[in-house]
Every structure is written in C-alpha cells, then in structure tokens.
Amino acid sequence: MSAHPTSPETGDSAVPETVLIVDFGSQVTQLIARRVREAGVYSEIAPFTQAEAAFARLKPKGIILSGSPASVPEDGSPRAPQMLFEAGVPILGICYGQQVMTHQLGGEVRPGHETGEGGEFGRAFLTVTADCALFDGLWDVGERHQVWMSHGDKVTQFAEGFDIVATSDGAPFAVIADEARRFYGTQFHPEVVHTPDGGKLLANFVRHVCGMAGDWTMAEFRKTKIEEIRAQVGGGRVICGLSGGVDSAVAAVLIHEAIGDQLTCVFVDHGLMRMGEAEQVVSLFKNHYNIPLVHVEAEELFLGGLAGLTDPEAKRKFIGKTFIDVFEAEAKKIGGAAFLAQGTLYPDVIESVSFTGGPSVTIKSHHNVGGLPERMNMALVEPLRELFKDEVRDLGRELGLPDAFVGRHPFPGPGLAIRIPGEVTKERCDILRKADSIYLEEIRNAGLYDAIWQAFAVLLPVKTVGVMGDSRTYDSVCALRAVTSTDGMTADVFPYDAGFLTRVATRIVNEVKGINRVVYDYTSKPPGTIEWE
Ligand code: XMP
View 1 (cartoon, rainbow, N blue to C red):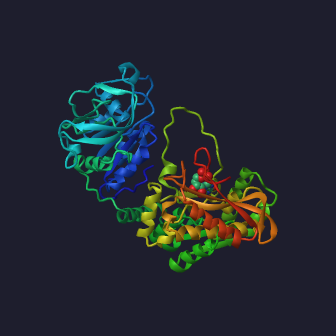
View 2 (cartoon, rainbow, N blue to C red; view 1 turned 60 degrees about the vertical axis):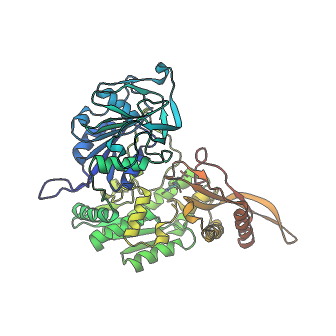
C-alpha cells in the first residue's frame, strides 16, 4: 500500500518530486538520503529487490544506485532492475552502483585481485579531466579534489556512451558520464563527509541534472501529512501513547492539527521518568496545546512488579507487558479506537539488505506498544515514518513545539529502570533522579547539551567506602554516560575535560545522599551499548 494519498482529480499520487535510492546494502545508504533531502529534495530508499515496485509507486525524477559490500563479478551479486536504465530518468551510480551500472550496460568490472592493483580505501585525490553536468558551477577541468574511496573492484572498460570525466591514481574511472542519457558514475562516495564537496555534487545531480526544484520543506511536509492523516482516519478515533520523548510528541501534535479532538493521548507515567519530566509532558499537552490527555499514574503498579527483578531482560519484558496492559485498559475506558498513532521513524522502517542471511540476535528487547494493534484490531497511523530524527526535530519546531523540548536527548521507553542495574526501588529512583538532574544541569550550564547525543547518570548496585568530614561513608556508586552518535546504532564517548567531570562528581557526592563515588563510562558502542541494560 502506498503511504501517499491519491488525488481524486488526476489519479496521480501526491508524492513530492522524488529521488529513488536503490540500496545494495551499503553501510552508508542512509547518508545518501540525508544529503539529497538537505538539497531540498525528497528521497526514499528501496532495497534492490523492490526497486521496480518503488519506481512505479514514486515516479522518481532521479535514481541513485548505492554502494555495497558485494562484488559485481561474483555470481549471485545484486543487480538493478534493467528497466531502470530504460526509463529515461537520470541515474547516478555510486561505487558498487557505478560498477553494476557499467556491467549491466555492457562494460567490464574486474575484482581488485585480478587487476593486480588491489583496492583503494580512504582519502584520495582525483583530477577533473572533462566538463560534465555533475560538476557545473563546482569543479573545473584540471582541478584536484579530495574524495573518499572504499572499493576493491573497479571498472576496467566503461559501457558505450560513457566518457571519463575525472581520474585518480587508484581509479582511472573515478567519474564517468553519459551526458546524452544523463547517467553518471562515481567510484568515490560523495555521501560521506570525507568528500568535502560531496553534498554539493549530490545537490547538483538532483537539481541541475534531474531538474528538481529543491523546494521540499517541512512546511510542505506538514501540509501533505495533514491531508494524508485526514484521508486515512476519516471520522475514526485515534489513540496516541506519549512517552515524554520527541517523536511521539511531534506525531501527536501533527495528528491533533489534522483531526482535532478525534485524537486522545495517553500518558502512562510508570514512575521511571526523570526529574520533572511527567509534569512537563502533562503541562505541554494539556495547557499549551489543549490536546485531550489521559494521565495514568501507575508508579505503584510498575514498581510493585519490578520488586525482586534483577535480570535486565526480565525487567524490560515486565515493563513492556505492563505498559501494554495499562494502555489497553485506558483505550477501552475511552471507548476504544480504530487507530493507534506511533512516532515510528524512517531508520526503523528501512528494510536493511542482508547478504549474510539469517536473523540478527536480540541484544535488548525494545519497549514499544508492539502486539497491541493486533490484539485490539487497530490500524497504525505513523506520520513520521519517512523522516530522520533531525527532520522530526525540524517538524516539531515548525509545529511550534518549544526548542527545549524538541532538542531533548532520546530517553528509553523503560526509563530509569534500565539505568538502575539490579533491583529497582522508589528510593533508588529518587537518588538517581537527583544525580541525573545535577549532571544535566551542569551540561546545560557548560553549553554542551546540543553537542551530546545522549547523557545520563546510572546508579550502580555497588557500595564503596568513602570519607566525608571525619566520618566513614558506605554508599552507592554513580556512573556518568555521555555519547555522540547520529542514530544510536553506534556511539563514541563524549570527551569532557577533567575540570567538568570533577565539578559534576563533587556536586553529586555533596548534594545527593546515598552516593559517595562517581565514575565516567569510557566505552564506545560497539562493544558497549549506550544504556547499561
Ligand atoms: P542501546 O542501549 O541499545 O540504545 O545502545 C540505543 C538507543 O536506544 C535507546 N533505547 C530505547 N529506546 N525503548 C526506546 O524507546 C527502549 O526499550 C530502548 N532501549 C534503548 C537508548 O536510550 C539509545 O538512545
């Protein structure tokens, strides 16, 4: 089913001007989508196996073929649907995309080990040898430019109609172009930041080569989505679970703008929120937006059930199940609903292309309202499924949500329970809330909040000996965590200076009864995860 409504007059789908990105399983395919959107053009990613259907649905004005860990000369490696090359639409092939296009159009690609030259990985310089529409206004003949290469195989004979327009030492076919068909291939990756002009090259492709206006904005998105939500929901009722996070809040405000009081929000307060968080959510929705909100105070239920549980998965499962039970009971109380709204994001719905096959292992059971739509026979309303996290923040601002709310760090569904290894009690939640709020206050005071993806305190089930004044103390250890990340899938440790950490540690030990030692977690992801459980 299309995510876009159909216009009654024309029968055309109300899809904005779109670039179709055909994914062959590269680690950085999502970056192509982001760069294209940064150029003001809407883009969608489709696995190569579904590219033909996506082409029919989206009617794209440009196509980009991604990189891949696969090797074109190897049997069984992925191919683009041949019809894409006959559709009269401009194509840019990146790395594997260049090679697969060359191969499918009659040229030759050979494995690095056969050419005896090996691959090329990392920073490289290319020289522009001819003009081409991709370079217009950007690169001139004779110039050298830094690019990022990551390839073993290479094109050894280009297909008919193509010319070389840039070369590098390791890739004589660094950029090839068939201006008549408007097909281009780059051996390097323009989507990564290590190709400094990469974003501009991609913008040139979508705007100059494909002729798209570049007017895809959040204001436009908001209008289109409101129409779509109205078309999907009709006169039905929608329930939305608020978690306190940005995604569900933005989804709720957008849906409310579309259908008004047909939407009811349910906020299940499990008592595992941070300091002041529940009050903020309730006041924002009730007072600021006047959105019907059911506030369920369920702290006792959750903390009662968590008593005695110490295994991280047991804690997560209990919270997930109880959340759904409470949510379902509330939904029934308000007379049920035909639709459940969720703040699902694009990275959650992109189907990843796997070459290894087999299911991936469960690292953690993520908490959401999974299972509920089937149980209650509800359809899903997911207005953010095409957006990246930073785009959701833009949309939130567009909808008038306060900056301080929109820019908030992510917070996990199971809340503080997974930041208190061992048994969770109200007393330990209160101790952690205090330490966490001091830590975040200092981060804000130092102007570091926006530079950090996520920062929080963890309360450890370990007691150590300390001395305060002349007395011995025997209290808990608090760990501080701060990471940078783009999507939470991988993360680096935030490099605080020692003075900052000393200040936070001193304040926590002095101001929070129950903590007498503070440590900083220096583990990246992988091998660590961001949360401790
Ligand atoms: P991990 O700990 O898996 O976390 O490295 C990655 C990101 O996901 C968040 N997280 C969750 N978010 N429900 C959520 O909504 C969950 O159950 C959950 N567990 C982890 C985590 O805070 C980080 O941003």
